Image 1 (cartoon, one colour):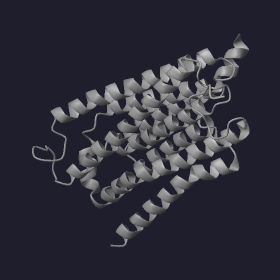
Image 2 (cartoon, helix red, strand yellow):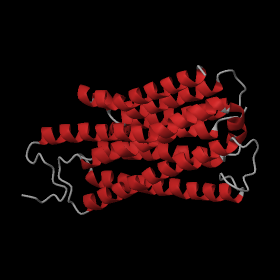
Image 3 (cartoon, chains in turn blue, brown):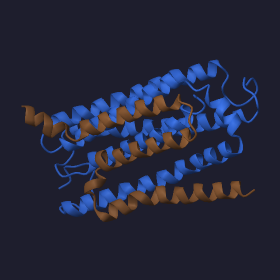
Image 4 (cartoon, one colour):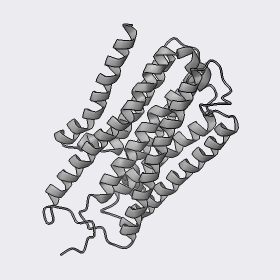
Length: 208
Length: 91
């Protein structure tokens, strides 16, 4: 009966299983929008109040790392989208693409780590020793660390989920009609979409 | 063989290419002094997000209920940001 460790509440009713899984993940992603929404709103508010300071502060972000990371995430979404597509017809290819997605995710975190290290070398964290003027530039940088940090946590969770999906697929423990990969992929795409907005907000301000 | 690759990668490869082109565009636009540069770049970001949502996240063929659920979050956020901005501008 339970050959699938990820047992769904709608065993035997595939249509119901899919409908429930899809609605469930979309509602969960809506709560994630709530989560990030507070930070996005803070950014908008403080940028409106201190636009000059934000422009000065944002020039110090590392555009190359940010752009490379955007390209990495967009490509990882491409990989997992094709994985979902081939899940029925070619399961081996599908799980290999899931592994590719995991590797891209790790690459993103690697670049982020290098970037954080560079930011810290330049003391770009709010607090004593902060190099920029006026003081409101620290607000931008506080938002930078918070928003990219929370996003990186989400990428890490995504990597964990995708790794689990890969291992389960490789062990043939994902049922033929399971929504597991589809649902996990939607989470991954969402994390990509958040970064799609973070990129212009944090890296493209004050460049002209 | 050719048609198999096409079946596999279409439209995802085209969407990815469009996303990369948009990334290049937004990057280049950031260096051009223009009046509504921020709005333009956020507009490009919105187009990228819609491409990911429609094609990669399958919203094009999702049920009406799923599509409704997908806009709940952004709709609420638009209200929040809109009202906060209105408040600040009125001070």
